[in-house]
Image 1 (cartoon, rainbow over the protein chains, first blue to last red):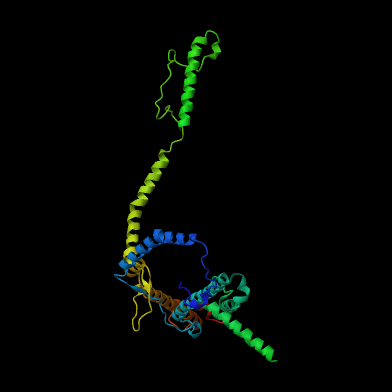
Image 2 (tube, chains in turn red, cyan):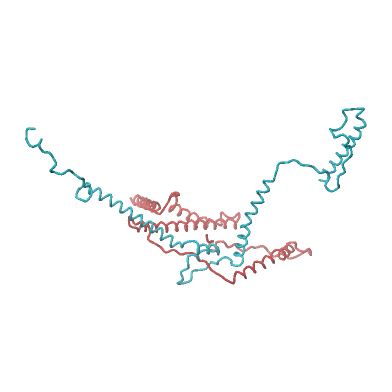
Length: 175
Length: 190
């Protein structure tokens, strides 16, 4: 499944470690390890990887994400029109997969925010938390409790019941 | 291993010493002779320094196990190594596809939606396009839908013809009018 395209949500705020002056003549072992790693591991691996990429760049080819046309919904199908039912069902399943991935992306964003903030998570991740709550509530309203045999028809019936409840609540509220 | 051979060598030397003293002391203490041995074989055995005493180690056979594992390795690698080499060649020299936006006015072929070159090849040459399978499924559904419709109409026609009796079905053979004997109804006093 595709990665989250919005990188702004994952930006780490800049660090504020101060630059320190050198006061000893003992060389920093960290830089020694870094140079050793660079020569022993990093350079050969980068060389091999770039050679491989040069070989692959000779004949490039691309892949695309398929865009599906919208077909009439289940509510716009005539009774007994099984072909319309089939196409609407396929479209509903695709839309459900998209919605599942949307919920997954929101969860990942919250997880990344928690990882970034560490102990300040409760305070600084409130926006992501609120977004996740809204998205999961919407998903639960639309697709929740349909069960493993849920299809476009059961989802439409659930939507119908939701609308009836809303209308009843409005009628009760206006009284 | 060296310690084992030293131990065995020391045991053999001790046994040889026991045998020599036993031959002399058998007259004195008959029960002190060593283990049963062929008469006259008292000389100590000389062991070469590299292996020590050769032992016949008794254990369960591993012939069948090793044969099975050898055969398994052979047959797995017989096709496994060429397949692994082929896949390595494809991954290094052909490489995976890059994700791109669909250009304006271009309709990609159905195999261009896959990333790995082998998946693309399989989708292109071995499998049917998803549009074709979709249309085949819809054709099957259409045929079945028409069949159900016709069956329902036939049931309805049958019911109506049976009920109304004015259709071509539900005609039953009745005997000829002229064969009926009306003599018992011919007079009113029967």
